[in-house]
Length: 255
Image 1 (cartoon, rainbow, N blue to C red):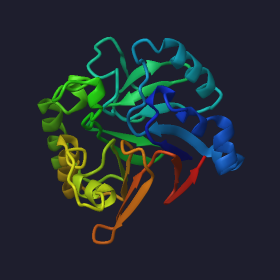
Image 2: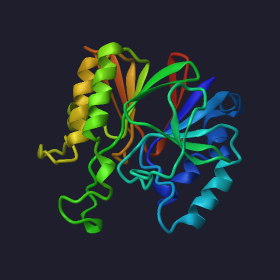
Image 3: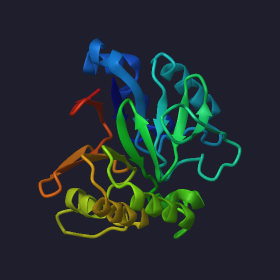
């Protein structure tokens, strides 16, 4: 089996759906590899249940239902599900529970700081980042207060890592701060809060504590890759590109 990964979806605000339709994926990866996909993971800012976007969600659901695999989402920062108490937590056989958004097609969110086994791979799910859309928010005020981890969440993941710090891959929204700086700092070397916000700082701390093969990230609306030769660890940031994780290989393409 295989796991499909893609970047921010934004409730299809910028036609991101076109990259992950059945037709686009079969064209990009071929029918045989498409048939192996067991799950699809969006790396944050999926944006489902956006207030006032019920028709848009319904249209996305119809297109996504043509694919035979469930959709799991990393918590981003533009996520209306943050802080909602009315969404059920359900067990789907991948370890810890997920936050259910829609049943058919199946769409759910992975909980921050939890570990999931998906098609044979163990994933540490992280998430969150700073919203920098200042035209939509007052300075210092988040879109949703929960875009950053709560203290209880941070304490929980640190306690978990003391007992188990080995995973196949990490799923996050923004990346570790040091990798963000390496890949996205401009030629003037300016240091923006987005490089090293609280979520990126937490990711960097976790990055030093764990053993894994690599990270998959979104958030930056760019496709970037970095391989740390010392850690023997890869970092993939996805947006226009998607990737399929199959065995020890990662197959990536622009769909």
